[in-house]
Image (cartoon, rainbow, N blue to C red; front, side):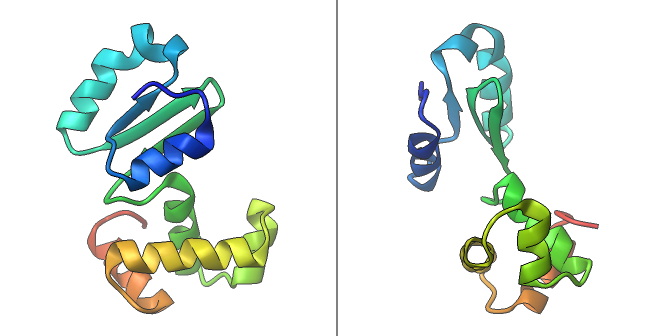
Length: 119
């Protein structure tokens, strides 16, 4: 999918699209993205500053949040570190729980460790 609008790229991810590239990046990134897609990874390169990659359906920010949970940080601490609201952290947590099929922070960290998404 070609896209220059990040919210649309994220919606495409939710719909199951494996690769999203901006028109400017097709010539330089297409072959790599096809290879990564065939390996089961999902990549979203919307512009030169915005790249979303997913592993097991999780975005980079969700994996970062999982690592912070594993480091025993609270939602408030995570929100301060990422410069996002506590409510946004909670939304990310809900998404993480759903994607990993768990119902708690402990379950999410345990599953992420099992999948080797975090250390």
